Amino acid sequence: MLAKTAAAGSTGLHPDVLAMSTSLDQDLHMVREDLAGSMAHLTMLARQELIPADAATALKGGLIQLAREARAGTLQLPREEDVHMAVESELGRRVGAASGFLHTARSRNDQVSTDLRLHVRERCLVHLDGLLSLLSEVCDRAEVERDTLMPSYTHRQRAQPISAAYWLLGTASQLQRDVEAFRWAFSGANALPLGVGAIAGSSLPIDREFTRALLQFDRLTLNGLDTVGDRDFMLDYLYASSRLLLHASRFSTDVIDYSSREFGFLELDGEIACGSSMMPQKKNPDVFELVRGKSGPQLGDLVSLLVTVKGLPGGYNRDLQEDRGPLLATGARVQAVLATLALALPRVRFNVERCFAALKADATQATDLAEALVARGMPFREAYKKVGALVRMAQERGTALNDLSPNLAQEMDECFTGDVMASAQVSCSVARKVTAGSTGPASVEAQLNTLRAFVTRTREELAGAPRLDTLLGSLMEAPL
Ligand code: ARG
Image (cartoon, rainbow, N blue to C red; front, top):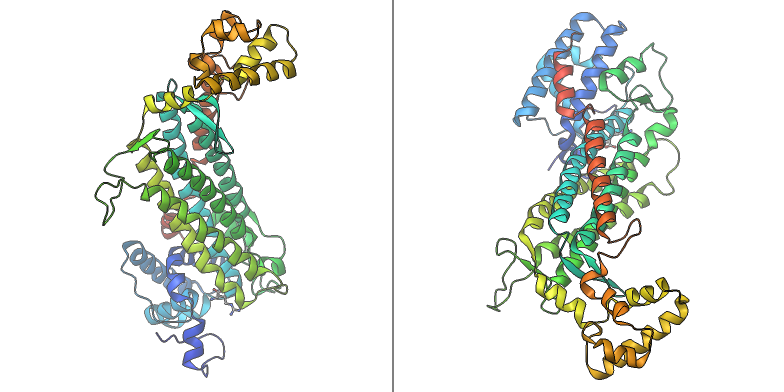
């Protein structure tokens, strides 16, 4: 592919250098952002009477045409170095000499930063939408699974009984933090760079505040030198995305393990279980492996941008163009993971019997037994030792703690009364938990209520956030 450029004084550039340096194909994913930025800039220039009214009108007409075509997906731009030059050159073709006024008091440095910030802002809102839907889906499923009991794990060894709702709400809590992270990334990106020019500002009386209001940014960037070399907002977005994908990856590992024959707690519907090309009996959890797999390249993309920025001198440096790959890959990846999890979750079923059998087979209620003794006045460390001895005795006899006869237990130590033993049955373990944040029914209910209120509140708070297409539409309609 050959690129050309009308950028200042570079007509002699070797075609291979141009081909190597072009970002056009990636930039085309941000063409609506670029057009929105240009429309706002143009409106401001016209209002400040920095360009002739007839040129402004012609330019506005040209930009509206381009925006319509961009929305319809039919826009063809010339093969220029980047989207900024391509738009300018196409405007030249369509409106003639008036196109030369658009770049007044603007540089591609503040322009690209504006496009990127609009893009990150939009991505955050799209991801937040998907995340909030997934979060409420997980809550709904948790509600259904309140009475499904299963073991919890520490060190991948059976620990204590929990409800499946509690397991699901563990992931929901992570998703809640991901919502907060994307909101943080959104507000980091929500500052207008346009108007700082190449680095030092402009001697022309532009009105950055007016442009800011048009593009619905909530503030101006503070310092132009910082602005043109700043990709912190993008790092924040990549970090929020990486953390979400880590959470998705860890959840997937649980699902993959729990759906294996070794655990047998979960079954995947045929629609999401993949077969093997050779082994006819296989029902593989590829979908969750693919979700887990996405976290690898995601971490790579975060590190990639960190390394690109590391050690750059102040101001704009062309290295920054490498930001586009990680940015675009991240957006697509996050959406794919959110959509896949939302689709897969209802297609995963619990095998209630296998879950309960796993609880009973081990002494998962041993801590409850110790607590039952503590409740009767015994120091915890003593209770711990006595229960430990009881567990060993049950193991030696090949009996589950749950099935140990009360007489045998009391023979071993008289503290193990029928009452104590009955209160520490596996089936009552979850119901007996009373602390905040526990697997106990009241706490699970409270967790559900907190998360649902969080979803409702966040949706309300985000309802007025500026969406790119609406913004572009209103800029197209706004008078000059
Ligand atoms: N294509 C460039 C980028 O994506 C735009 C900024 C170019 N600025 C410059 N001074 N050459 O970063």
